[in-house]
Length: 205
Image (cartoon, rainbow, N blue to C red; front, side, top):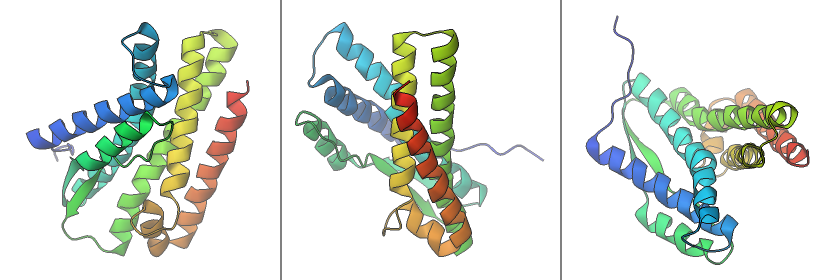
């Protein structure tokens, strides 16, 4: 039996790269209070790419992974207008980010939809926990300010993404998970909130 491998089209790869670059730049502009061709800005962009960009895209790719595991056609498409809005808003000190989504075609019942939807927030919970662990490790053994900043920001943004996506609102993952299984929804929402609290406490270390 051959191991399962995710399938990507050339168009999809272009959309993934575009979404990752623009959302990373937008958050770098937000955190740097503007765009500049300085080492400080490039460091901010690298941190955003490693934390925000990774959090958003891995969230979507896990949706894709489970959808394809169920035999569905699943491809990521960037929302170019929303990427432009996020980029422009970043200059004004705030961002509403909806960089794109995975479009799924196939036999998806409520249970499958719930599991596919849960995969995104679970990914952000795991990433938040990993960044919290990285912050604790760095603080104890390798107190590099850059590494501490990456870990703190990565934990915060991924915990926030998990909580936001678990809201039981139409179009969000939480609504589909709740429709599938209340216990799974409650557990994921609880873990998301726990990670947000831990990320906030860890930021003060």
